[in-house]
Image (cartoon, rainbow, N blue to C red; front, side, top):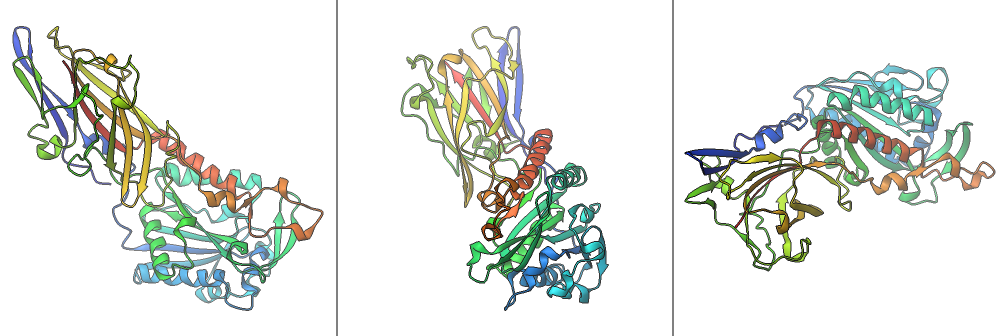
Length: 475
């Protein structure tokens, strides 16, 4: 993550009793960027990679098909994409795992495309995902292929490890879901370890059996590797079934850009666009000082509230200003639930100058004559739309400077988490024919847990989506 070297500055020259004292108020994006989780700007030049394959019998059905399955294609793709992406600048090791993991050579990894690899026995009788959660490092990428069949207890222990060893340390966890042809037995269904046969010969893609690729490492390395995979086989790798859990949600902080996205003022005479200066007595304050130049002048919402009658203090359409700004969310990370009015936490700092009493300004954090709402996020290009409603009755004669930081608070679940999930309570033990092998046991609570611990890290670090600066004068 890079820190912006410029700041928005508002300079007001106030004539105080007995002296003329210039006061400078800054709206600084550099300080906002300090809240961001540091993201390496590029992937590692050298990579230490691990390809780890669940070698338990539940995976055998992916390789027992008349034609090469999507699972087998994925194993090939994972291997060649590391070599191609890092152009031989990698230290690549292969592992099979069950209750423990065992290093295998490349020939052994190629054998994972054949059913004999999943014969079970020894350490490969049962899958325990925690054995592949090895300590992270900046230049390390760990890739795990599994069906994610875990008990409730296993999910809780795995999530604790991912939180402690990865997300809390600034690393990321990626999950890619793929559905493949399958002809075999699904083991370890629920607490009673039930078994069911499942065959996809008469099914289409939606009815295929899911498996998952779990990526562990830095955000930049995971993103780069995923895009290598997708570029080589877009039919196999679907970005809609991929997510990176990572507490750093933004590339950089955004702000107003009135040259690019002009604001839409209400059609009345109570709220007007101010000139590029705010006046006080015989003095003037310049919006955007020498430090900020033209960029500063076009990044501050400067308004003048007239003394016209108002709507009994109600924030109606006549007081609504429509805004659009750029939005710099990192690709594939959790997205804000824009349907929720409290999707963002608003961290407000206000500075007020009483122009009648001729006194310097005082600060406040709870004074909010502004209301921000109606969030709308567009993806291409990335933009954030919202409304600012001004309450004139809450604004006294004088000058107000508002700095409002948008901090993400409420995230949305992805539809495929629910679509690919089944829980044990819906498992019919009386009929083998009713088993739906196209869904994964406890997948939704697993993803919800990863979402929750990511949200915890976000709440702790408070990355800022946007810093919005308003300058408002009431006559």
